[in-house]
Image (tube, each protein chain N blue to C red):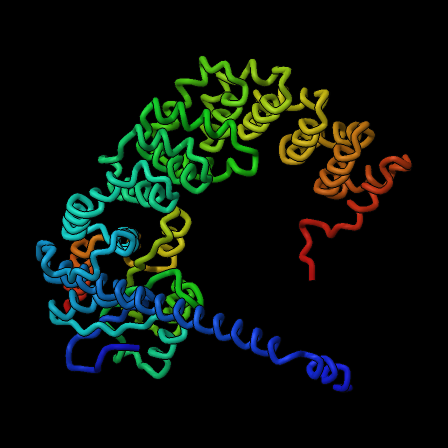
Length: 134
Length: 352
């Protein structure tokens, strides 16, 4: 798991692709956020293991196809574990209608499919954070 | 463990044989070492090139060739990284970068290699065309469709389905027809994922196409999209003398089980081809309730064993009423199928 703990507002990303992690890391840093990244289901669950509701990140971004499982399952587990789980987005290659519906029905705010536009993703994420007053 | 026979063999080997084995293993080791070294070097280069591309995108800068060291000027490496990025990003900055690399670097190689005798180079050209299909040369794609290497033909099929010009599609179906049945799956995939114009082309041409093989391809592919207007064009095919065409047409008909088509579908239980009768038997339980039992009881005594077997399975699917029919069967011919069907667990009950 990468990303140092700072006083900055945290955003959490589960993504196994290093290029995307790096690009989003830079983009969020530039906007004043700190991006905590995990590259697998195991790492993601480990990050949330000892967290309390007030320590949760402001926004979560999940990839679906991870080396050790499905990002949707991680989201499902975390949503049931925390009463106040932050708004979440899916960023994935799975673009079939039933996949998108599965993500949205689970409670995700948006479902972005790859190939994605960084500008659009950032705009959506920032708007979401703004609407939450962060 | 008795080691004596093994030791005897070792003692009998001469020094020259030992030396030969030693040299052989050393050569294998050296070869493996260089393969690993080369892979690592390639991966490092790939990572470096990816980091340059990411830097351009992060900084929202325009791409400059000066930022790419000369040793990274490898067309295969460049294409691999470009393809990888293209599957992830669709930014304005990425599009600009991609265009720049394609126009100023990769297209030079694709132009040079489009008539190459090396299949890896022809595949390179097809992959470059994929990244920029507007610049793809239809003549080259048409030639690739008839390439002797299957991989190139399949890449070209995807390209043709993407470009979707009538001439290319005409060649595509002609080539697809010649492929063996198992070799056609890649073409099906290419067409189903291709441009919607391919389906308009097929819909337009199905009215006049005389080649039975191509007709059956059109019907098969169009029915995959569940467009019921297809039924207007397959009336003659449903009664064709060609079994394959008739089978494809019946399969298409089965995708639209309405009250109007029901009678027509049941009529095919008397088709001379067992393959077609099996298709109908399989769909009967979901098509018509009580009538299905009566029809399946008849087909349980069909002359073809595969029809009898599928009838038994279909009856089992119908629950208690179907099971009762199966249990009444005493005909020796149907016994094996009936026995197997009855041994299956009920579908509505959970199997522990």
